[in-house]
Length: 67
Image (cartoon, rainbow, N blue to C red; front, side):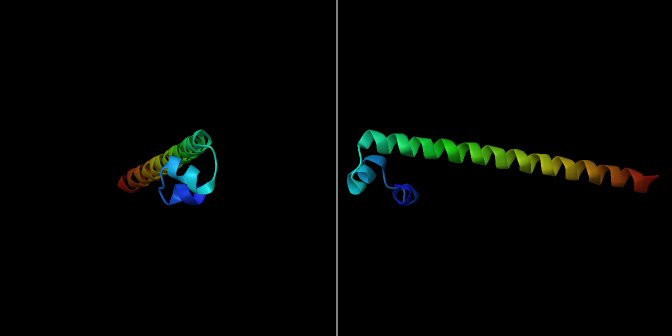
């Protein structure tokens, strides 16, 4: 099923190809999308925090150099 998901095969078609219930396949696809969404949110948050820290450090260094 993961291979079908990665290939962007619709859930119902994937269910028929793999031989599972179409509702189970749809639920599986939905759960995978939720997991991916949460992971992307966490990575985006880490990236923003990293950039904020870098900008703060750059600002402090700039202020020190202007003294």
